[in-house]
Length: 518
Image (cartoon, rainbow, N blue to C red; front, side):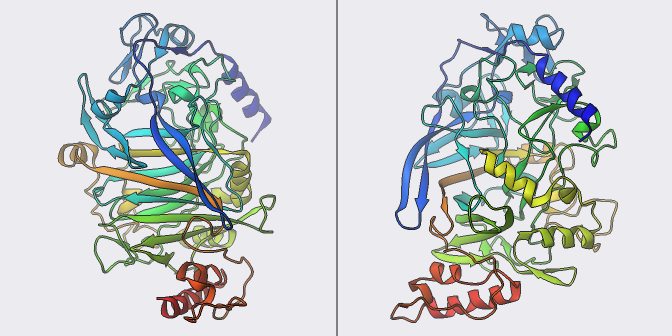
């Protein structure tokens, strides 16, 4: 990034007043537990919480119940500009009754359930975005993921075309930005959001109201865009509905989160998508897009049957198998009906892959004729550095007012034939996904996230360590194999012994494990 851009961004961050806290409602977080796991000791549950993003919260004038923001517009009497609005307006709490009655979000049996559309007492809520906090609730729960794995259960059975149940990590500040701009609300009130799309729809960025230049959305009655965007690295662990899924790292050439302006934001409308500080496309592994059209979908003919709950395990492997090494591979496993399912093996550009690596990203970009902004913004190394610094877990559900979620579950872009490599991303029709349609026809859609765990490779229950060193051939038995002849003593452990490269050898090894351990 040019030094002039850095100076401009720094100036944006310093022009702040105080982001206020409202006193009209009690703030209560939803309870969850986080399993922290080791191979030797298993998993230990830690009590954590869930807070609601500040963009969804009630924003009103300090000391009153008068809205600062209604629908898609700011009240000009209290918000004539950024500085006055920041001084005059307060984010209020979310009591337990509002979680369910206003936002359609509940937590039971260690599972977070998010409903799509909820008609509350004052307005209609659509979608939602939440963050995991510490048990105390005043800071976000930070994750450091290099040489570790992350696991969670998910149910997408009630997510039709056009919706996205997204669970992912972003490099938000641990305190929600209280250290910047005299933000008094902080993590407890869901402040500080950023991602690789550098969103302009944030009402507050870096502790400052985003009023200046605000334009109401032409399609979303609850949203608009301001002058500034909020950028940071993003690791999309899970973006999915019942028809399609992808996991995607988005690298950035910045550290932490910033408020962006102009070309640094990489705005599509300005023609700057590939000029910004973050890689908006990312390096995605979408099985359908990569040719494995029978891997993920509704019914028993698919390897992962989305009519039933399953576990998603993502492993962040490093070049030297330590937390100090560079991120070299992001591997995916699933567990459904008690069986471990390896990620779909695919062939791209004449090469076999089943995980995200630098070679996969470079090959995929070339095969699909996409600009390789992932490499330009630092690739897996930069993504790993963000994961090392610490990231925040986001659990969300949304529809897409820009391109109807076609980029996830249909043919996109629309100006290219569906048969063009990389265009077909899912089985949904290109006429699906319009927010007016899904909000009207599928308001009771929901997604569930639960049983969240993090720990050493092979510790969360879905398989052991995966060697990054090519070693073709069947799995090597442990010194004392189980009497059944299953290497490692279980299907998960057997798959953990399989070589990661080449993909064909990995698949053959997994097939052997299934035969010998089932």
